[in-house]
Image 1: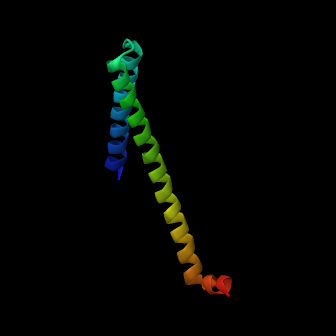
Image 2 (image 1 turned 90 degrees about the vertical axis):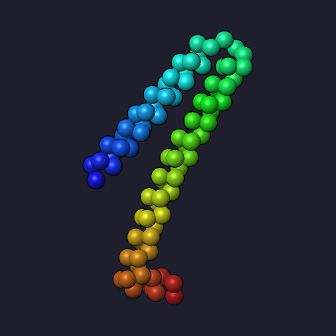
Image 3 (image 1 turned 180 degrees about the vertical axis):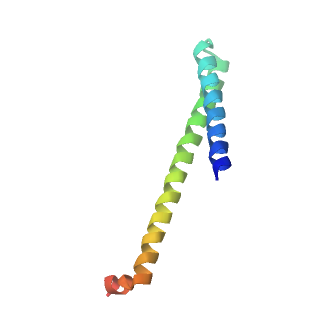
Amino acid sequence: MHTLTRSRAAFSDQLQAKVGELVERAASAAPGPERSRLLRWLLAAGAVFVLWRLWRGAKKLFWVLFGLGMALYWSGAAGWLLR
């Protein structure tokens, strides 16, 4: 259990370090093709981060709704609600 948490933290730290490195390189680069390429990579990294956060939220929401549905089903309240 604890190794999974540390693994996620290590991945998050590595990702944050790489993005920070890209930001520094993009800020110091002169306008041109190199800067455009770095900005595209930053945009892609941002999109991956947003999608990852959405996916984590969707999984949690699914399991909460599933748990509530099972509680209603097994308690018999689902039949009362659907009448």
